[in-house]
Length: 46
Image (tube, rainbow, N blue to C red; front, side, top):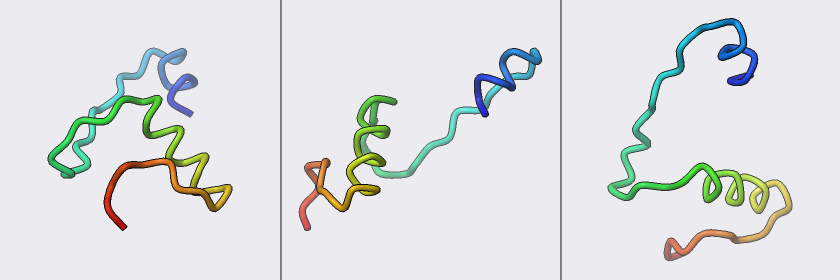
């Protein structure tokens, strides 16, 4: 979806997750993959 918007010449917005810590795109994607698979991929305390 983001790639399609860029290809059309649209701009994207940065969104602050409000976690107090910056996360890379890779970290977010890995966490999402882990959540889909039912695994834990982040270092936040349970």
